[in-house]
Length: 200
Ligand code: NI
Image 1: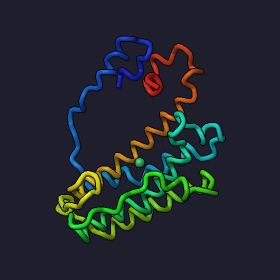
Image 2 (image 1 turned 45 degrees about the horizontal axis):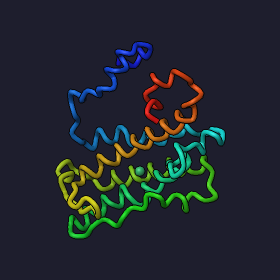
Image 3 (image 1 turned 90 degrees about the vertical axis):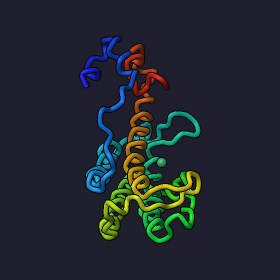
């Protein structure tokens, strides 16, 4: 972490580029996942609620998603992906592939909604997903149950639930990168030391 506090030191930046592997990799557990999943709507609300248009509609170039698009995509995940696929695995195992997930469904589904609407909807649907997860009373043994992904083939329930967590992080990261990119030129020469925009 000391590296992060030392952006003026070129050597420190070079070291941070090496991306050392973490010393310990966590094995998925329901308890640890439950510690993360309820936070994402709060994080997004804190980051985005009330932002003026230039931030809310910012993208990283044509064909890339704005924070508004990303929140809509996360809402669709609650409705069509995470818990529905858990239930699919419990019901069908790997006998029936999951229905494909439309990654761009939000372009239609978000029409007419404000960012505040979408943040509320994400908050509500994520709470509902977590309530349903509790209702299913999954055990650690259930995590090795298998399902069939239309692209990857056989996957485990544990992999699916781990992906739910990392998918949240992926899109938080995407939002941060998108916002930071807006000042890519404004920061002038500091760009060289700002890893979030350095390679954009
Ligand atoms: Ni996604």
